[in-house]
Image (cartoon, rainbow, N blue to C red):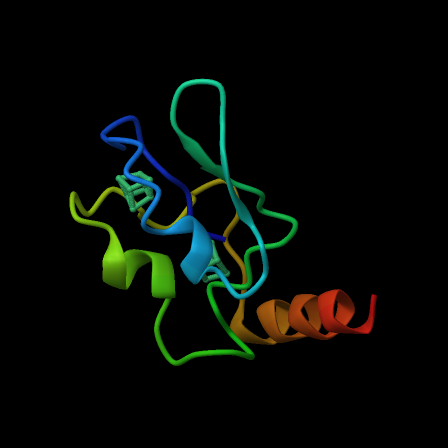
Length: 81
Ligand code: SF4
Ligand code: SF4
């Protein structure tokens, strides 16, 4: 999964781009639900939120490192639900 750092300026550009509905406004900055973020695997070649973020504050989440296989399984689980 990816994560949003405290450099987020709450511009709301990323939220509608997420195909999994993983992004939401948090208490102070936008947040990504690691249970829903597939790094866009299954939908797009590149993480869509990273593509649009104007301040480049969406890196890989070091606490949620996943293989492409695991991300694909998550995608299948989400779309089956
Ligand atoms: Fe959503 Fe893709 Fe960004 Fe993950 S990488 S939060 S799935 S847009
Ligand atoms: Fe924050 Fe970037 Fe999303 Fe804007 S696009 S809300 S700056 S994470």
